[in-house]
Every structure is written in structure tokens, then in C-alpha cells.
Length: 50
Image (tube, rainbow, N blue to C red; front, side):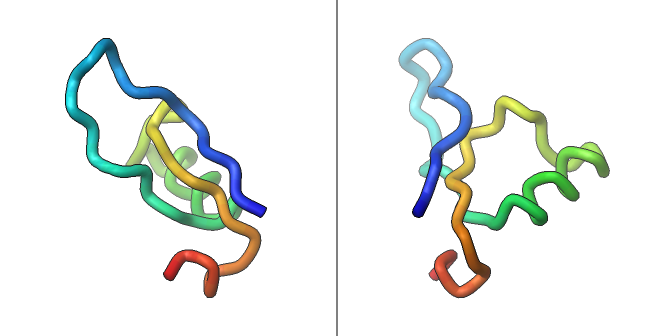
């Protein structure tokens, strides 16, 4: 199962979403590396990122 979070901003070209686990996503948000609205694809396992 995957779930995409965030949306492209008003017609600007965006890089494809990053694939990461929920734990990785939460850690990056807490550390301030990414914003909660960053386009990411959440995956169930680290192996699914590939």
C-alpha cells in the first residue's frame, strides 16, 4: 500500500514524490528537514522504496 501526501503547487514543475516509510517521514518533519506539505509517497516497508 502506498499513499501520496502533498500536492503540486500551482502549475510549477515539481520533482516526483520521495518514497519513504511513515517513520522516516515523521522523523524528517520533526527535525525540520521537510515540511508536512512536501510531496512524499508513504510506503509500508523500507524495501518498498526501491
